[in-house]
Length: 551
Image (tube, rainbow, N blue to C red; front, side, top):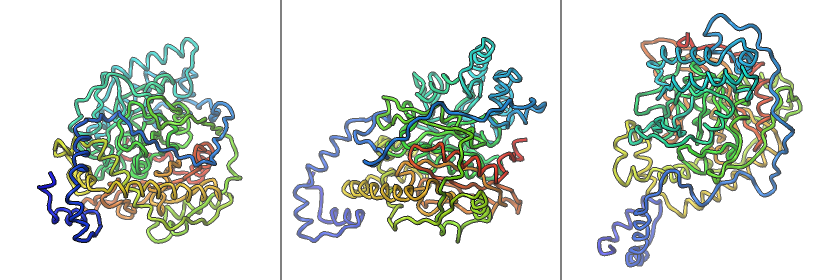
């Protein structure tokens, strides 16, 4: 093998790695690279399946971390739901606190609610392309079972009888789970993911599988492009594309999403939903597609803040099948006080590039009377951490690159997975170790920030927070803050990175589109974050507006 290598090969490899060696150093390498290359090829001969994790596990907790203690079961708003509306659309868009109350009191049956959502899916999915698979027979069977239990006086909890959409990354027994990608579009699992089991145990009703950008990136999947119900001329962003689109359009009560780097918060920003990305490790990922073992997180996409708390309460918990999952209590009390919270913001985030909605949201925070402070973060190359994602993702799907089946994916732009996976083969293992060390420094930086404050508020693309907080594992709540006319919405982009949220003007038409605000909180302290989110949601007063297309 070494005979086929030349000094020019090594010199070319140096340019790919951003290095420069002397002729003597190149000559010395030429004679003993054979073993290094042979070792790599030996390993590649061993096929590793997507559900085989890394031996190394990421833990967001620094050595001095103390897990918050539980203070009992979650407490949600006490409401009788009020009278049941006559209009099915009003029922479909009702918050889950109302839906749950109507179901428990017998004002509404799970079958009727399920039929309402199934009818809306039938009417709108062709244009939105937000459901990859609809399971009406299963949904009605589960709805009837939920009604039977309620009729017998057995209530499983707040999600009892509530229909939902499941991101098509999670295994569902005998139901296609295609990961949005052509090579896997006929994949049929033999068992349910842990999160599906937990939602079933909570009484939730599965409507079907919501679309996912292929292999958890973007809004392009093997069936088309998932659309934003506020403007069908733009995609819903990704990769929880269908979950956000379907929830925003009132095709389900809630949906499940995942986030590696923006895949819950970005489509929530685009579609005007409320997305909760929990602390890394809080929700077990067993039975879910792995993209990046040290980054993937599972969370709810809803239409109101308290709804996300109801879902997180049901799905919270570790599992032996996910070595990175962490057993942690989730405490939430809808009536808990938020007024003593210290809220911070990065001033630069509200200057150049910020929208009028961003600035109005900050003023709404100020008007709540909390302790609002300017804060800062150390000057670090946060964006460099993205190479960790690229390396893990390329490893998770290396067979697509090595077997040259990556060409079957629809999306083939420079920033799409096929090109990214190929480039990742040239990433340096030494640099990867150094990136892990940088990650620890970033963890300490955010730990210092959250020693000063309890909550950070900012636009979706606040400074380094999208990247930094995903790599440290801190939770993020993204909620609707207002509306903009298309063309004034700030574009979110990581270049050839994780997000793809382009927009399109059509014949001079003006579209009113939602704009959100993000709240970040301390590790495993989603409760206070949600309490503050509820207060801000009330102050902003824009959560109930519905997309025109949804009607």
